[in-house]
Structures are given as structure tokens and as C-alpha cells.
Length: 146
Image 1: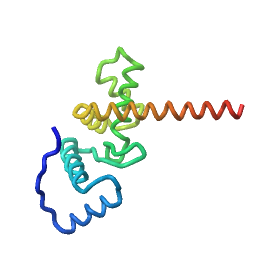
Image 2 (image 1 turned 120 degrees about the vertical axis):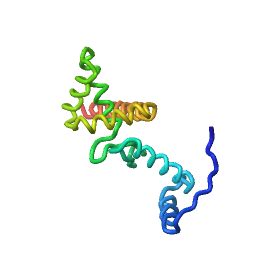
Image 3 (image 1 turned 180 degrees about the vertical axis):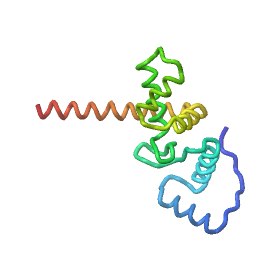
Image 4 (image 1 turned 90 degrees about the vertical axis):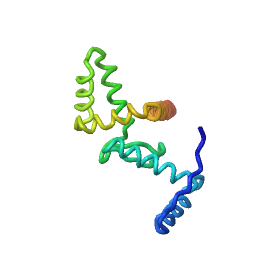
């Protein structure tokens, strides 16, 4: 289903800030940004402790004062791979210990992943590809300098 037109009224100061924000980001319209911000605000309401941040890998969900949600999920997946016989709670505790993240914040990230698994899994795949490319470039450099 595509987007649905909807009339929204903004306070003049809010509309000006939105326009200024859109001008600083070529390729993003005020309408697209409004949709994104409303979606993100609803997600933050659903998952207190999560906010959204721009970065080299694009816009992503992050824990307030902490790592990206995808990083937490990857740590849990890594703990599960390393210890396949552990029960679920022990896997979470292993990831908590590994990351040094309080278990409540770990639960916030896992709750977000449960609601938006495709988004988070794509971010994990993107990170793994970036790591693979960086490793390949480093290996080439090492061969050249050897």
C-alpha cells in the first residue's frame, strides 16, 4: 500500500523548522520527513528507551545513551552461536555480560527487534558486509606492504 495523502496543520515555527531541516537534506521532502518523524515518534512511544539517530550507515534505532539496537541483537545472536545449549535467559545474560549493558536496556533492544525484525536484520547484514569489505581492503594493503 502506498502513502495516503493527509492534511496536517503545523504551528508556523514548527513548519519553518521542518522546512529548514528538509533543505539541509537534499532528496528528502518535508512530507517524507513528516512521515518518518511520526513513524519514529510512534515507535519511541511503543519502545521507551529507543530513539533514532543519523550516522554513516543511515538512520537507525539506538538505545538512549547506548549502542545501536542492531549491535545488541548481533551480540545476542553471537552469544547464541557460541553457546547453543544455553536456555534463552542465559543467552541474554551472556550478552549482557559481554556488552556491559544493563539487562533492562537489553530487553528494550530485544523488544524493538521483535517488533521490527526485518529492519534490524538488514542493518546487521549491512554491517557484516561493511566489515567484510574493510577486512578485504586491509588484507590487500598488507599484501602490498609485505
